[in-house]
Length: 267
Image (cartoon, rainbow, N blue to C red; front, side, top):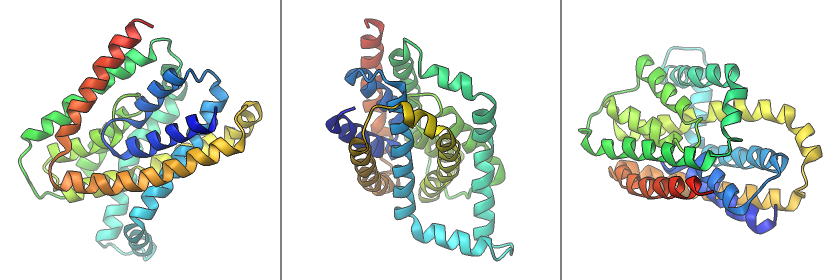
């Protein structure tokens, strides 16, 4: 992997992790365009850039995270304790599916027709985003029931092409959760599965790193690009959802999805 490829992939990961267009889907499409055939390179790179986007959420929401942590360890029933428990509950579906079906999930990313799969999944994302146009404004809070359902929506985003932020925010809006609360919950809930998944992958990383050919330079460039783009995209997405403009991304997902299907079918 060259430094230019790492830069582009890092920027792509950082931007698409928070915009409702699927980061995994775009990375797969970019990997196909750049013809990145070394799975060990891509494995290591994915760990690093996902870790960078994890840090971007921490930077943007550091006040919320500190407040939640401080109040959680008071071990008293308060709004922050309740919110933290709801975040933990939302991670349960993803944890179960990730642990029980890890091999099946990883096999999807190695399919010969992965570009076509990404295309169809982007069409699903486009549909979810478009439907938010018809959701009336409401001011409900996240409950245990909705936290679990939003967690299921996040689990679906394991599939390349299903946007995590798009699926979780759309689901929250469908259940009448107020827009600012929906995006805050969506962005904070991602910290748990990203941290957990990356922790498990780091355990395997030494083996893959030993076999990877990419030097540290491109990896660092990709990580910095993902972090900076992640901070920008995270703040941008906050404003987009507050203004109720999330459905406009459905047009982008539709165009990219159809393009991926057409190109992938002829590969």
